[in-house]
Amino acid sequence: MNSLGRLFRVHIFGESHGESVGIVIDGCPAGLSLPLEDFLPDLERRKGGTQKGTTPRQEEDLPYFKTGVFNGVTTGAPITILFENKNTRSGDYEKQRAVPRPGHADFVAHYKFGGFEDYRGGGHFSGRLTVAIVAAGVVAKKLLSKASNGSVEVKSTLLEIGGETDLEKGLQKAIDAKDSIGGIVECRVSNLPIGLGEPFFDSVESVLAHAVLSIPAIRGVEFGTGFAAAKMFGSQHNDAIDNTNGHTKTNHAGGVVGGITNGNELVLRIAVKPTSSTPKEQQTLNWETGKVEGFSVKGRHDLCIALRVPVVLEAMTAIVLADFMFLEQKISRVLK
Image (cartoon, rainbow, N blue to C red; front, side):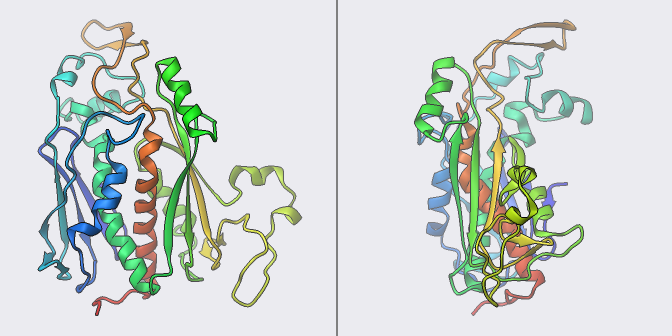
């Protein structure tokens, strides 16, 4: 449900326009230094209003450590991190309550939770909650660094917007159309050890796919060559092994074979849909009248949510890999 992981486990909570959003991290070893400054760069990358094409809603996004950290160091107890919601305009959503927004969870949430759901800004279904995922990712990245003497690096890049590798051009397409637009984000992880992954149902790809598809707006995931592999011959797709360290001449597998990391670079890409909230008029149901009518989403929204996804993908990938590291006993329960 709202939890992910086995030995390194996260539990997310909160709503877009509620008092706060946050995360509980269970299984983090004692002795990990967590100064506020370590969180700021990644939190800044996720913020809206800091770059063209993102929502004008700006929050401070300062993490408040409620449990599990004492004198700036983890205690071994569950870590609770809160982020306050201060810049909300809930009235924007009260006015459109009668009309479930196309592409959003409004309709299904209403039926699943009997009308008791928090509908303001998407409530618990909102991308606002990814700020908590990013915070957990900072912790996970630090743990991966401790386990590998700083050699494991998790890095995501926005490759395309609207099918254009020229990101500015892709963004301009949406501006000209007065509409929203999607994109492709790639994540690469270097210097992972051989042997992470627990086949059959807990292979590296299946757990990562489970995690990244839970990020709002993600519509697909591929590893290595991905869907292009369907057009290749086996002799083309197979990665020839170069040496006893498992290095391969090519990396069509994306660093995972048989569900287990092979020591090569882990490569995955995700498809980010266009932001569901668009000023373009659409046709949708009005619950009160029972009729389909013209509707345009009001409020503050991202033109291209993919612009803010790279750091979220990094975080989710790091969370999953940290859990695998614990399963392989590559991270100690107490850090010194």
